[in-house]
Image (cartoon, rainbow, N blue to C red; front, side):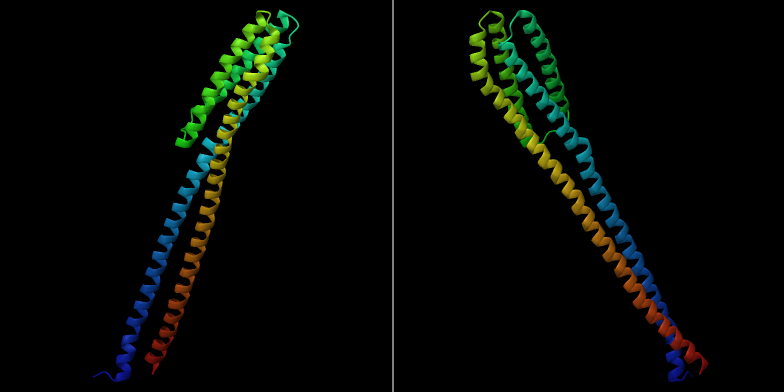
Length: 231
């Protein structure tokens, strides 16, 4: 028949085993949570950085190229209305055609990206305003070619300038929208990184605390069991 001390001693190894198993399982669970958190954060950061690199930054660049070409086109139109002869007119017309092609190319490249609803509305107004200005420009060039340079200059300085300013203003609004979206995408990546870092550090520290707590207790029980077995 076992004495009370013997029964206590025989029960100690089971308590030690339970604590070790609990500690081991806790570490496994925390490790799984750690991995899941890291994967989730990487996925979020990848999405945000992908949008930034593949959508917003190229869009800012192409809209900037369109803006530069528009300004150059407008400057050439003004020169056309004051050209001294048909040779200069032909030169300015060729240069305007080249700048118009650059605008068209940039706008097509921008439109190739998937546009958000608000972004599409802004871009549609930009395209329409630019098309209206080009139609006015064709009339101005025709007037200049017909010897009506004074009238051509008046129209260019009046209705032509107003339509150009509208087109450029709409383009700038579109570019501002794109810049804000790109900035938000970058901030989302930074916030996700900070959240993931905090979660990883928290889980890691939690795992260490659990392992230390259960492991330290297990060592104490193991020592008590060893002492009990020698009595």
